[in-house]
Image (cartoon, rainbow, N blue to C red; front, side):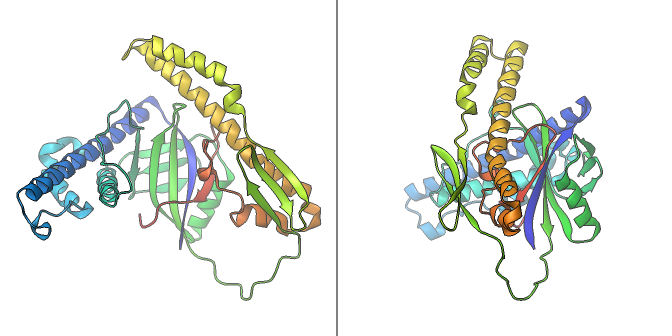
Length: 335
């Protein structure tokens, strides 16, 4: 089975927005609690090293299972309000903290830091009690939430679920910089049965060469260039507007309503630039496939389905325009 994900924009009410913000705060609280435990454990381990204690006799670094056991014991006193939220909201936060500490011990990243509401993106992940219907998705402990617009990706996911070929694993809810809430539905799809011996495609095959000054060049096997995608300049063209919005943020008082509105306007401007750039990146393979459609059926399959073109999650500006959704392979496994 393979992990895939579909992202949809949510149409939340004011009450639901407050509920989702509280869930994101619960996740942040669990992260900070876990980081505090990890820091205390690391300080004790460092102190034992100064006392001459052998490495094998020092306290062991905290793992996810240890943190989960400690959280279960201390949750009634540390977070008596935790019954209002899904258990998975806290478990995923604890696991992220444990993975961050393990990466620090392996030398891949810095020591995990505490998260503040003004710096951390509002998000959380739930697992059980999930369901997907036409126009709405159900989140564990938080109920049904409307989906802003329909798309082919979520319709296909519903068909796979009805046929028993896909199972929802977890849903990550995130508040984007444009002020909208998005839900990423990660699911397991059953592997298709083998069709026997592989047959070479009858149509032409093309390759994509990615660059910096020129985003991508599409060429056939004989070296003939079929399409050229210039690098996106949408951010450069909008710098004047972004500088104006950034000045408005810097000139407003911290904590004021004027600053919150200025930050929201700046976030929407960045989201629009990211959406335009993402659309330009994905317009080239579609146009090239349409241009060569009559020359053989293998061009579109080679260009899009086999991963020749990078998925939207790998682009620098992976945002989508409001009301749209996307499907892509998931980077997480075993969740």
